[in-house]
Length: 227
Image 1 (cartoon, one colour):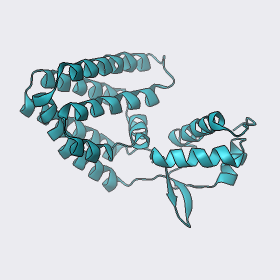
Image 2 (cartoon, one colour; image 1 turned 90 degrees about the vertical axis):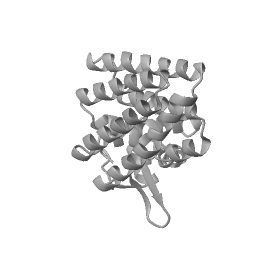
Image 3 (cartoon, helix red, strand yellow; image 1 turned 135 degrees about the vertical axis):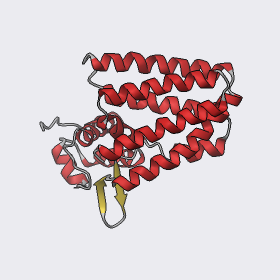
Image 4 (cartoon, one colour; image 1 turned 90 degrees about the horizontal axis):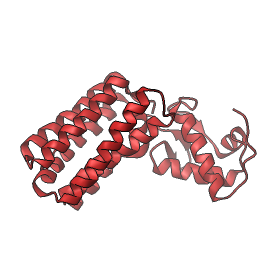
């Protein structure tokens, strides 16, 4: 990789963060690979200050693990860990979908409609090869959709518990593992969920969300994310 002569500073830290994150998502930095400030600074042509800031942010977003006395490594998840995350998400978020159907207000539907429209437009653009940032963008919109349902559920404790399982690093690598048909399935599931929530059918919304999350789990067990 060509060094860019990046200097220190908040904006440069953002650029270093994006460079390192891209290297992780694209598999240039492997799951379990140990990384140091010195090595990353040399690799990305940066001083150690923005690299240190980027590593802290990457850890917060779920891309790396920082362990005292052991250093930093690219996050790695075994199949059973992936299954456990999705099993718990299925329980929590299916209940959230039921509550959202029963409790939502019009502004919640407007927010979900907006996110869903963006998801459908972006997935179509990605199929046509028009968006190089499709994985990041789809992951962000997917997260927003699920968080909007948690907001509509009106249960802060449930929302906090579910959000702990949805770090952005895991979601980005999830979408990086999906093929076009799996992405289409996910977007279609969201549309059905929105219909169920709008109809205030709690049982239907709950069943759809459970099937949606367990479907993603089964895909990932066969094709685990890169970390």
